[in-house]
Length: 209
Image (cartoon, rainbow, N blue to C red; front, side):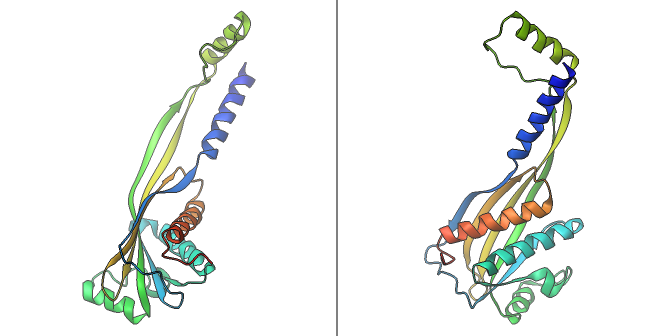
């Protein structure tokens, strides 16, 4: 019966892993927002807690890579300016700094929330009204009584991306997304970049080819 318990636990872990995802939950494009030109520079600027600087680098770099893969001129703010460049600057200084780098648009990526949730997984899964005879029914329940459950900790992220035109200051596009229990932050950053760039293409901000 212990083997049965271990098998059920393993299947539960595999199922949880399969459900791991990063997906766009909503997006919006401003009326009249033009399709971006490939020769115009897009500055990608992620804003996360200072202790997560490695995550900032990943979110910026993979989004830049995905935009470049589609032929767009994109750059990482962290790579160009460093982690503390804009700390004490006002609006005009920040915008001026971005524009002086040659950027026409800035895509901000903001971590809205990061939450950890502890969940208890029982030692077995019960399917009511199954085709049980006495022994399958008895042996399942007997085994579940002696197969300990376990706790899992899931991490959920909420992200918001906004694309601004640096000349007018207008918001051109906004996208909200969620990441549920990513196996690594690298994997989350890769999936985020793919999903957001795909959505920008769907919204016709980026060319299809």
